[in-house]
Length: 153
Image (cartoon, rainbow, N blue to C red):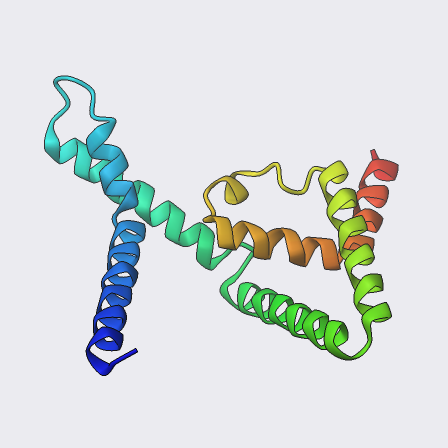
């Protein structure tokens, strides 16, 4: 592959990345324009789209309660992924155990209904994966809280 072809591929990749980021940022505005009802003022459309965008951004920044809890949760999920890859490379039996633990956690949190809330509905796909993996990793805590709440009622 010569240099010109490589430069072209890098440029096309950068264009795709920029268009993805722009579409992700302005998705709420595009949805509002296409869902505009007849007779609705454009100012109302933009206000509704801006409010929707702000709610989505807030849900992403505070998906675990606060900004710092979200940062900690994301770091924990990154640590889980790194540990899983390391286990897969050096200790395959531990990787299988980690995968079984997380699969059981995904099942347990699904049965507890942890994903049935308004914050989860506003998250992007990658944030939903982070949300589900963190709750799957901490499923014993969530199961204990659900047991305590059902016992107190």
